[in-house]
Image (tube, rainbow, N blue to C red; front, side, top):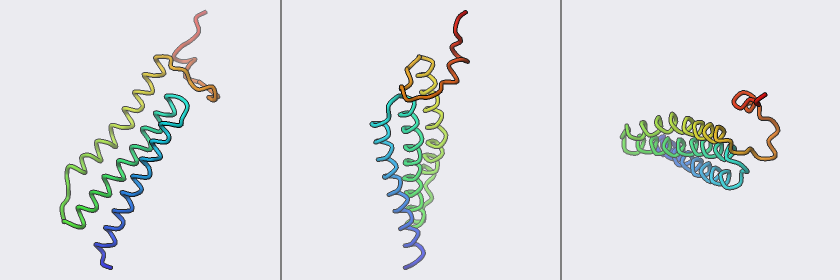
Length: 119
């Protein structure tokens, strides 16, 4: 086996791991109890899934065709920068709209800071 074949297999494994993370993300979005934990599943695992898939595609094109795709690099950077920020802003908007936490949540330290009780 040549070095390029080994690197192509590594790219295939990275893409496969990205697809597994995508399925885990989908299960997390379906199964988790409230908007805050669903947001965590949607942003963390799906960001990793997209990053793994795009990285595997980048490695594949780089090794097999000697083509460095600027679009894939920009896609990786764009997803890496925007997905966590958008997840944070959506969760923050839900909290400020007073969306209830699940009953299993043990502590809400932010409630005292943002919504002080009127005396």
